[in-house]
Each structure stands twice: as C-alpha cells, then as structure tokens.
Length: 485
Image (cartoon, rainbow, N blue to C red; front, side, top):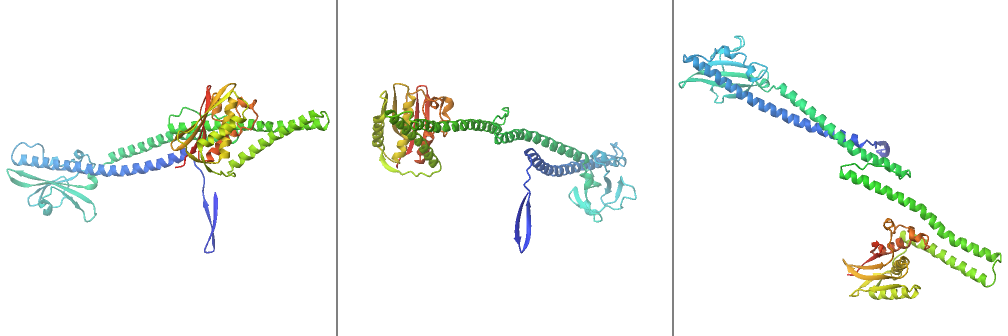
C-alpha cells in the first residue's frame, strides 16, 4: 500500500493506492471470463431476439394456413360436398398444431361482421365483429388492446366459392403467446452456459500452461539472485515465445555463472600478478639489507628490483587507464592522418624493437590513400596490443599480415597471424575484463585488460574491435574506423 499526502483548501487527504499483485493465471482467467460472459450475453440477446422474430413469422404463417384450411372446409359444406371435417369441431384445440401453449380465438363471420361460429364460449364472444378489421386489405394485422396495452395479431382468410364471398375466418392471438418459446430459450441458455464453461476451462488450462513456465523462470530468477546458478528449467514448451524466454534465461544464468567463476579466478589472478613483483622486490631488498650480497651482485639485485617495480607500475597504470576509460574520463584527441603513412611508420617502429626475427610482418596498404580522424597514441595502443598478442601466439617461425581496406564507408584494419588460434570455449570471453586464456595464464604475465581496453578505445573512435575468426591455422582481428566523407 502506498500513501500520498496532499493538501487542498486546507484539508489533508490521504490517497491509498493498492499495488497488490495477482497471479497471471487469475488475471487472465478472470478477465477472459468477464469478456466471454459479456460476449455471450450479447450473443444470447441477439439470438433471443432472432428466435422471437423467426418464431413469430413462422407461427403467423401457420395461422394463415390454418385460416385458409378452415375457410376451405366451410366452402365444401356450403357446396354440398362431403366435408373434410366438422367445421365447428375443427375450431377447437388448434393451439397444439401451432406448437403454442394457448388456444387461439377462431371466429367465422359473415360479410356483415356477424359471428356465425367460434371456439370461445358464448359469454366470451362479442356479437358483431369490427368491420374496420374485415375491410382492411391486410390479411395479417397487428393491433393493441387499449385496456391492457398488450399487442395481438388478427389473421383472416376469406370464405369464397364461385367468386361469391360468404364471409371470413378470423383467428386472433396475443403476440406474447405467438412469441413464447420457453423450450428454445432453455436450449439457448444451456448452450450459452456450456460455451461459457468450456471457454473458461480452455483459457484456464491455456493460461496455466503459459503461467507455469513464467513462474518457473521467476523462481529461478530468485535462485540466481540468491547466488545459486544451478537452475533447472524444462525444455518441452511448444510455444516459441515461452521457449525463447526460458532458453534466454538459462543462457543468461550460465553466462552469469561463468562470469562469477571468472570473477573469482580473475581476482585471484590479479592479486597474484600484483603480489609476485612485490614479493620479488621484498626478497631482493631484504637480501641487500642483510648484506647477503655485495658488490656487483648487489647492483644486479637493485636492477632486478627496479625492473620488478617497473612491471608493477605498468600494471597499476593499466588498471587506472582502464577504469578511466570505462568512466569516460579520458578524452580522445582526434587528428587528421594519412592512414597509409601512419600505419607504415608505426609498423616500421614496431619491427625495429622486436627481438624475434622469426616472425615476418606483411603490410598491405590502401590502393588509394585516405585521411582519417584518429588519436594516434590510442590507435597505436590498439595495434601494439594486437601485434604483441599475434607474436605470442606464434610458436617459432610464422607471419603476421596487416591489411587495410574500405568496406561500407568504413576503414578496416585486419591483423592476421599464423599462430595456434584461440580455443572455441574462450572466444566469447576474450573481451571480458581481466580474462586470460589458459594458454597465457601461466606463460605471459598481465592483467587481462589488453583486448577489453583496445575495444573501448576503438569504440571511442566511433568504430569497433572484433574477432573475425580463430582456427588452428591462425587468428584474425579487425579494427573498424569511420572514414571522412
């Protein structure tokens, strides 16, 4: 419950907002049931009106046929032929032929409106039939009783033989009786209730099928939140979206578990990398302090201590630089440079300081030189790191190929080596901060910040650094930089 206080005209009010959550199963089933019921009620009303209308029309048609049949019997008697039935007797119990509970009022009247015969008792029969009804051209008329306000229908059929009119057969019935269809309404009610129950059952089971995986994912999320990444989620969902949700969560959980493991290992690795030079420096200085070594040996120990101090300083500087870049605290100072000239000069400098002459470096410039906006110092950091990694990957004699190209209005710098490649299991992790592969962990000292740092520098230039491929025959990295239009 949330409370919001506000003042209006000097009066304090408290607005209570209910944030109570309900389950997905209850939410969908209740709202679907409400929607279904509203829809079925609308359908029931329309259906009832349609049944009423069609029933009225059908019964009026049957009433007209009944009136014509009675008129036909009266004509047979008047002509002296054998009657199809006793006319007075045929006026009774006619309601069952029309499938109604009541018995309609049937009158045989002459042309003057005098009632000759009726199925009603003499007390219920009026003496003269209204001529206005008989003279109306319509054989089916809808009228209203002034006393009760109820509507009724009058159906008449002429009694005619040899073009001579004897009178009329008039049938009168209330509209309520003609439209009363209790059985049909009961059947409609049963059908509507059955559809409502079936619809509710269907949405209940479908919603439960949808809600259960989501509940499992929510339960697994709490498990991950508690630090337990060993989650178990089913894979037998047929719904594509639910399956994608479960699989994405499982992959995320596995990724978090991997990163958590890496974090633990990397913390130990960074601690070890920083502790090693400190231990070496401490031991060397302790030996000098205890005068274990003297003379030239003492100078050598001092040189070793300075060397270890330089390594530790470099690692600390890398950490500070990486954190500064991650916080966008180091600006990029872009300058216009000819990319062919810049790369040629830098590669020459790199080759000069290399001690290993077994590695051949092949440089392929652009066919048409282009000017790019770069921070030369930062771009050199990226390329130096990639070339050093390539040199470490080559065991013995090999080659490194640096190729410049244009692609989709971007400059690409591909650096390919002939080394042993990066294991497939490590390829998705090489840009994670502090990650060091098994091949480097015990051979080359460092913090595992080279590639993540290089990628951040490339992205700060508006480009990127990606791994194109890595197999047992070599690895290719690509730097992309935007070209000037």
